[in-house]
Length: 232
Image (cartoon, rainbow, N blue to C red):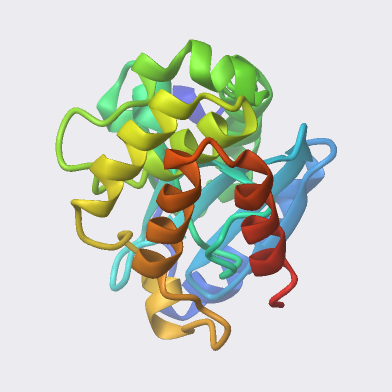
């Protein structure tokens, strides 16, 4: 069992990338109903429930053996189209109430680690996802999502969509005001290296949504989202 190990055997540097690719495949084999997208530095496991994408991201830190595990919940018709866009980012350590459990070594014991993380996915992570697996639940539990700082962890985006889908005008305007007043979304390293040519102007999009929100025109908001979704 990986959690019982007292020490780890380091991989040869030349084996890190190939092992990381194998790690993703083995991890996928241990979980059900997830799709996988993978680069040389990032594994994304995802599934769709109630018009939401639930994702687990495992990122290999540049120049190190360390893996970083985080979760993401976002609308499947989100206005940013890059496949590795993350919003409502929650590190695994937060879910496990142990900040050290966000980071793991990619070592020769990687098969055991894959099983360990798969077990965390099936137990703790999926329990976390279940708390927020509908837009009604997201609004009901919004205080557990609302950022405590400037919102650089991309949480307002999920709350904006939840307010739209539950037709909550006051919350929608409040979240839009907070989001529009902050810089554009934080992006992942993978997004930075592979920019999406179909990216929209985030600020203009949110301001259009706010204009409709002030009028209580949710039908036009949905039309705006639908038009963005067709740009693929």
